Image (cartoon, rainbow, N blue to C red):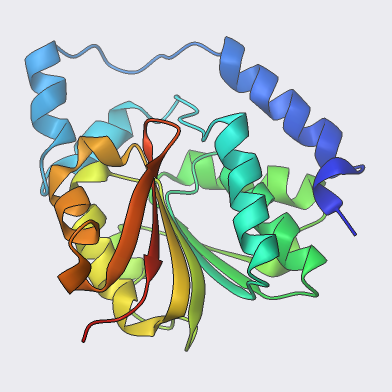
Amino acid sequence: MNTLTKTPLAPLLERLFEEAATSGSTAAKMSDAEQARLLYSKTEYLDLYGRLKDLWLPVSEKTGTLLYMLARGSGARSVVEFGTSFGISTLHLAAALRDNGGGRLVTSEFEPSKIARARRNIEAGGLLDLVEIREGDALKTLSSDLPESIDLVLLDGAKAIYPEILSLLEPRLKPGAIVVADNADMCPEYLERVRDPAQGYLSLPFDEDVELSVWVGRG
């Protein structure tokens, strides 16, 4: 079974990627210095992404396929996603859960307009029953009521807080759990952590801006 390449999901994803590629942005203009300051701030990231609320900010088609393959191939049943946006990555992950026989995908997004759009997309893909969308700052929404054992994590929200989100989830990572971080190069602190074997991960870059890590545990 391959939900990813069949109707209704395949034509839906094709349309969404086309929309993402051709869409513009009505985000408030920022100087390069201001954008850099907000991008690397651990306290002002909500301001930045609030201004970018009309941007799609999706994973690439290649990364989307990778997410499906990793979740499907590992037999994942519990997935946590940081940064829903319009739901493109969520659709790939939920499709793998469907093909694995079911499961639970917890995803977090703080921008209400994006949540509404993502929910419509996920419903159109026939996958809404597998997805729980949590609204708000992920440092709060992902701090409780998580799956007892997490099979796969996608980090694709505010880059500056990747380490903090990982710390919330790490106690529930099962041995061999996969952690995918999009645009990880924008958070050197995160890369330093997952590339240090003493921290319990094996890690390597994929396709320039994605970091693929596996939790093997400390000691």
